Length: 408
Image (cartoon, rainbow, N blue to C red):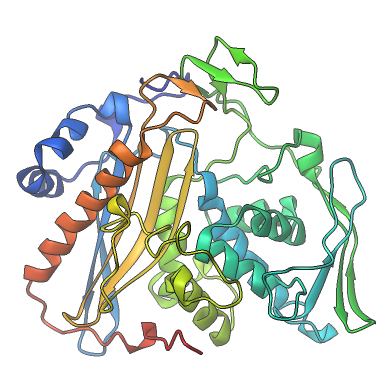
């Protein structure tokens, strides 16, 4: 079922590198070629980022595009957790003068309609909530409540103004992942940072009065279920939903992993230990985590690793690490990843999304994630991986900055 959106832009306006399309098509299975033959059904976009190191181990990036179009809407789902988590760490660094850091106990209070409080976190070793614990959960299993709490900490206004300041003008983050109206999402909770019984810093409740540009109307599907589980025989309105183009996602991840490779405007204000913290939890597997501890029957190793691995709950070889963020909702799947093979000394980035909703009904929980979406990512990732295995490099990369002892 094609997207029914007044903002739809013809695929001819998409960016495609003929070399990348030819390479993928030649290696693709009949299954993958059938998907690629139906862009108006699956609305896929894909970026392959080649990384070449110079003699000083400095990385140089080349992006290759396959049907990438920032004007063709897809729902970013949990991908908005990536900049929200990073901006939460950035904001923490402005509070150091109060004796606060990412591990400091963070109590969330309530001051407006539908807001909720947090005083405990059973996933933490000390049972107390903190920015660090929320960031861990976002990258380990894409936890929704963790995102909501960091959205409230950073604030809707600061989230968006900072992204726009960095040059991501098409990105907007308008909502939590809990049922709230537009006004409720503009209000964010009061927060206290505590050391024992001592208050270190109090953040007052906030309200974002800045307008968003919702001139482009976005409607998807042929029918949808509303929040009351009633079937509405009309497309679902995504006009005021979060928006995060794939190119922006790729740039944000690159800015986190390789800050010196992007213009200064696009760099986050993080400390070295923040980067190391992000790298670890972007790549750590649920089975390697003690706090939080996860049931690995549900949260298997490739739970949030779509490229190369997700389709059949694959085991990830010990020589490969994936530093990434994924999103899935309303039939949209997205993954933006940096993949490292320490044994073969290769590295590359892959970013992509696909829409798998053959009946055109949204919110019915009937999407072809397992049958179509995950196999798409697995095969696309492996095509690039096989190409990278054979590709000649002038300088082998030193990848030690991305190696961690996940047992400690």
